[in-house]
Amino acid sequence: MDDELEPSPEALDAGRRLFAAECAFTNGSTKLETIPAATLPEVAFAGRSNVGKSSLINGLTGRNTLARTSNTPGRTQQLNFFDLGRRLVLVDMPGYGYAKAPKTQIAAWNGLVNDFLRGRSTLRRVCVLIDARHGLKDVDEPLMKMLDQSAVSYQVVLTKADKVRPNELAARKREIAAVMATHVAAHPVIHATSSEDGTGIAVLRAALTALAAVTSVG
Image 1 (cartoon, rainbow, N blue to C red):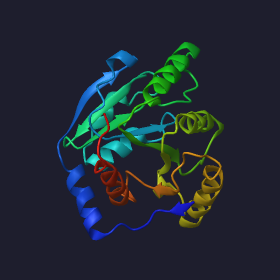
Image 2 (tube, helix red, strand yellow):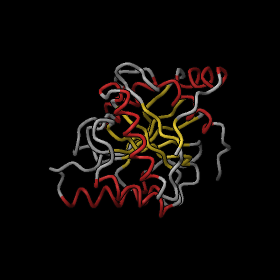
Image 3 (tube, rainbow, N blue to C red):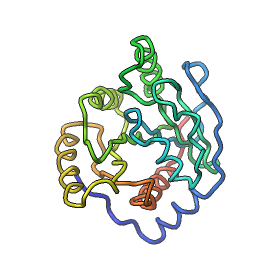
């Protein structure tokens, strides 16, 4: 597994410009039939409840409240869609692993996510968010297996990297890289980010902007 590579100044500037564009909530879906038509390239964000998913989306877009729609752990069980400059759709997936969530709710989440992932031609990548302080947990494994089975490209994005010492962060990356090497759909680059101090935000913007350039299918 590779660490994140420093993008060119041009790529960083392209990322800055895209994520400075207008970004608006367009749809919240709890059922497959209400998911919007696949027209633009999409990047989805998934992770355990309270991993910092909403904070990362807000940090990427430079907005404090954009992803507040899905900010209540274990309660907002829907896919939230945000249109970024008519070039890229950000999909905020419901947090998983919330201990107090009823089994029926968990089953509904799994069904919705499976349905969404299956055959979504415009889904370019899923960012699997992992808390840098804790690393991978058993609860993350079902999602990664689901993505492998669906042949959906995904990569780990570490959150709260500012809470970990540099040597600990490097060790955490190595640990995760060893696991991700066993997953067939995992992208090799691991991004380390912090929505608090901005660590890795510009680099991740550049990476996601490159995905927005991929021509839509269907």
